[in-house]
Length: 626
Image (cartoon, rainbow, N blue to C red):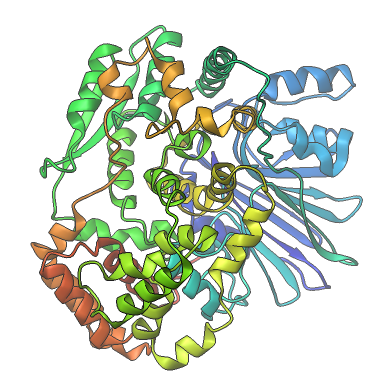
């Protein structure tokens, strides 16, 4: 696990060693163990290494036999041993035991299609000196990040936005469409950042660059939901168990201490149960809880830990998290509105005291239909409300004061099909945006239409309605929110998080499971729960889902009240000219009166803190002396 960075000249402008080292300095937390650089005419590659595999000889950059192909790599290739054996039979000579080296030899053998062979999580940059060509690849689901931009006639790229910002040529201008996307969905878009001109390479894409052809971005993989109705339920149960064990076993390969996040939910508990069956010694598990009983799931995590005899560690998070909140923007790298980043940061900090690698249960909700919003959509699809009645309800809803009980429900009744699902899962809706942002900002975001983008994405999966929603969440919510949070918060503490449920073989298999076996009546994850029966206790399998929620609204009404008001209504915030201070004051008042607006307020808080960290100051890390 590492962080990567680089600059490629698309003209005759050279790349300086100090530039690459400055970029690497900005992400030491991603790789505290080592640094590697490669400079040649027209190219500079850099990396920071967190040593996981081949501690002695696995330094990067890694080259082929004659030094004409070089690679820097962030991630893990879980099938590297089988790939290596095949490549050695084809005549390739290896110098190290690291998984990174298979990439250069795969490229020699298969060219750009080398990514098709990789099973794992990755972002890599490979330089072909003979062809003067750069190849950048990102894993299928988006577990590892990659940002890039063109500045001063050069391609600048790195694992984090702040890495790219270390290059003085890179300008800092808001991307107003990305801001609108952020306020609607808690995250910036899949292929854009909060700053204009700085892009993300989307999951399952490669980028190639040469001085004469410029940049080309191409998709190399997609998941297709194709239910197999010819197989019995027992087949899916047995196959799911087999693939889960295989995926967990691959992710337990490590030359450093390893453990698991354990929430007490079905996903993380299934991973821990599988690890315990494979491991010859007790699995180290890590859990976070809260004093507020409504949000505390430690009892479930303890039950799982006892059941499988784990070496269990836990921490109760207190509401006094001001120091943590101030640090988060640096590690989150972009504005990020999901408050579950806080417990993820804390459980990562807890784990970092004992291990360097953790396995997590993320991905199960997308694969097996675990979200409550799927249940809501299933129920609402059965409504047969005439269009005139829906329009009348919407009109009444619009006339009701904001914050009045029932207003959003009446508005929601007006929608049909995909628009109804989107309306239920948008943070600041269109009518609220007009009140939230200043008129000039609103005019700059007028072209933003989240619903049409989501409809276009769903149209790629034209089968069952549930499959369409799962496809949408797998392609957007999963990489934009869930995997971004896990990567940034684990890397903040220099630990590697591996996600067994998102092995692409398991993802492709899950897409063949009929939707009726995922959501059966009011039972979410039906087939996954059947597969885990007899392995996990029923009180874990069939308990109500809570999610990784925290009592943030209550904290904002209590100990953090002054902090939130002082921050969001400060002269610094007002002078940006982005948000309407009167409307923000209204949101704060509603939250104080008992309306839980934690997501709305947290989205505004993290944006303001991010602006102070990245827009109000330059925040360039001084390059060290060579």
